[in-house]
Amino acid sequence: GPVAETFRVIQGAVTEEHVRSTQGVFQFELSGDGGGTWYIDLKSEAGSAGFGKPPVPADVVMSMSSADFVKMFT
Image 1 (cartoon, rainbow, N blue to C red):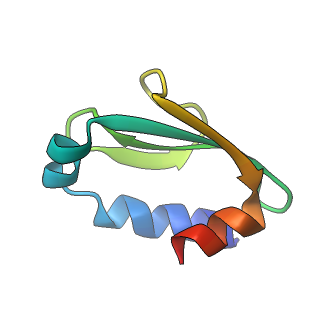
Image 2: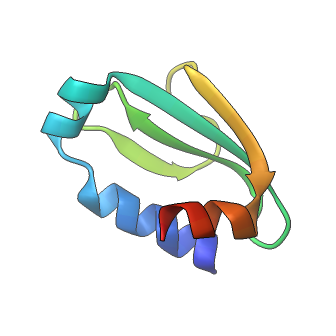
């Protein structure tokens, strides 16, 4: 779905430079189609993004609809 595709694109775009400059972990609690817990880790090693809880505690937790998340990142 659109949420999974958005996270796939984010994962492909994350670089070590993003991790060095950001040093943050973002957790998204999404409601609606494709919802659930997702994360973007810009703190650990080369960074990562995907479904589920982040590998380290989140610095920021955002709750929104999956439709708003997709709009925000497109």
